[in-house]
Structure formats: structure tokens, C-alpha cells
Image 1 (spheres, rainbow, N blue to C red):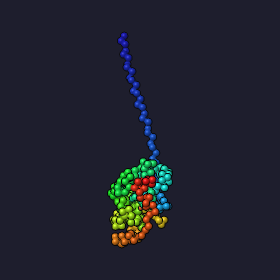
Image 2: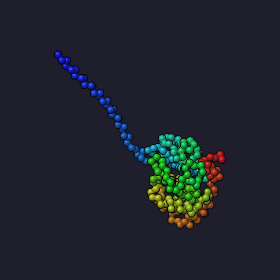
Image 3: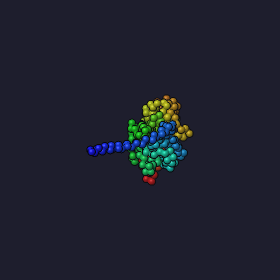
Image 4: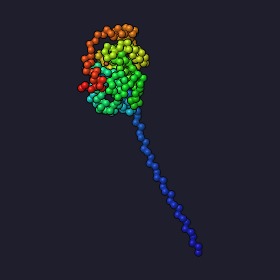
Length: 264
Ligand code: FE
């Protein structure tokens, strides 16, 4: 009798392992806080100086504009509380009335210090009119605004401009020391700042009357030194101010040229 051939066993198809479903990350609703540039105005009562903390809400990168040495701990605490990382320290000019915290902030945080190529030789990144800086998703435009000093810069971020001592609220910085030049200051005010859109918010480097911010349109209409004035009238006003020298001039200028080192 012939042997019936054994039917070969069909090999079992291995079971394809089920790919686990990746859980969907819940979408966090975008809050107003995440969309709006972080901006804090800080004040030094001794020199009436404003320091500004700017933060990019998306990357949490931050910049300080014109930090004052005596307030270094205050500023670092706020940066920590807001969950920010300091990456830039911006100087509007070499100051004569307070000592900068820029150098020490660079040492403590690794932030880059930025200022005019005509200013302090110790800065990390010298910049000039027309340069741009990035702070996360924020774009910072550098505007050359000499006149109060020859190294004056303003920084524009969207609808905000940080004017240092070039444009103050209803005033402007003096132009009688540190290579100041009233005619150059007129050009910076009228030719560089007053051509910005009227709604641009002006954040000054100082205020002595309790004012905090203004707009370009407001200053074009109401700034008594420059509104409706010719260049000659402006220069005559500036040359006739007769102000005493700033209290810290002899200490602050050499210290600030060394990014805040006062032991020189
Ligand atoms: Fe100044």
C-alpha cells in the first residue's frame, strides 16, 4: 500500500506586532502671555535710569537694556522668576551718571554684551546703525542716534523703540560732554526717530518727572526742545542749558568703558 504523503505543515505566519499608537500630545492653548513680547521697565532712583528687560515668549530668551550695577541682583532675580535666560545685554551708550552691570552680567550668565563700535572697547559685539540682532523670534533693529554722546544707539523692536538719552519724554539728553553734538542730536531726533510710525512707543533711558513712556507722535507734537523748532533754534536751546556736570561723570565714564569695572 502506498504511503500517503504527509501534507507539509503550513508554517505559521508570524503575527505582525501591533505598532503601539503614539499618544496624541494634548495641544496647550496659546495664551496671550505666550504671544506678547515680555517687557518690564525697571528704575534706579539714584540716577533716574530706566533699565528694560525684554523677553521672547516662545524661546524664553531675554535681553537687558542699560542695566545698573547696583541692581544686578534685582534684575537676575526677576529674570529667574519669569523663567527667562539672559542672552544679550544692550547698551544705548557709555553712561556718565551710573555704572553699568553689563560686564558682571556677562561673567555671571554668559550673555553677550552689545553696544556701539564707538563706545566701550570691552563689549562682546560692537554694532552700528542698520545692524539687526535676534532674540529668539524677536528682531532688534539698531539705530545710530548720536548727539547726546557720539556712540548713541537706539534699539527698535516692532512697535517699541528704546531711545537711551537721545529722546526723553518731553526732553532729550544734553549734548555738552562725551563728544556730544547738538546738531547731530537734532538729526537723530528728527531724521532717525521722528520718521518712525507715530504709534511707536518710546521707552526713554531716564525720566526725572515721573513719566514712563511716550510715543513718537506725542513727542513730535509736544517735545518743547524739538517740536516745531529749526535746527538753529534747537542748537541754541541746547547750548544755553548751563547744566552742572553729572555727579558720577569722573567715575562712571572710565568704569563703563571697562563694562562696569570700578576698580580701575
Ligand atoms: Fe547718558
